[in-house]
Length: 271
Image (cartoon, rainbow, N blue to C red; front, top):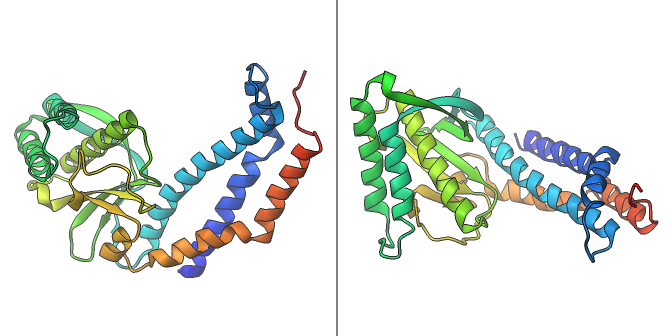
């Protein structure tokens, strides 16, 4: 399993870097930036565009990599909707409940510990949906990052993020999407007790920027915590492979070749 994960990491990262430094991608960046007036030299704006793109793609890669690791891990059973865009159904009442909850957590007088309010929201969602007629539900399509059954039998829904570094508006939207996806899954899985479907917001990097504003600490995991709680795979193994790949000779050569193209003036405006 360790070899499989190492190969997945190496092959995928090489593919991401090659695509980002390809002539096709560079030409897209040239077209984008040559229309802009800026004091930063043109070629360095192109470099910055490549690096920004790599950062975004790496974050997306980490999210899919964690899903792949969970799929391979013998301690858990990956469920069929995991890693897919799935059509889920909610009542308008549940949708409004979640929006109202997210808004209330922004208010200055909201309690620092949201555990009681969060659990009450989940219970009310279940109660509302269990009383609802199916024809009253509206469809929403959501990405389900990871859905698995732990060896204890508990079903766990996990929203995976690379880093806890989103701006305030984006952070609220992530939590809103997280709770609405949980609610849709609860309907699809016919959950009768909110404790039977555990929602986890997971950050791969352990660095903490925001406190438990919308989701209580018991439903947030960072770094090693998801691995320690549910998986046989060790976070330290994954961390080691990701850190060491930057010294891979093939990776270094791709970046060195790209740097030399810039230094030799091969990246210029098209007109």
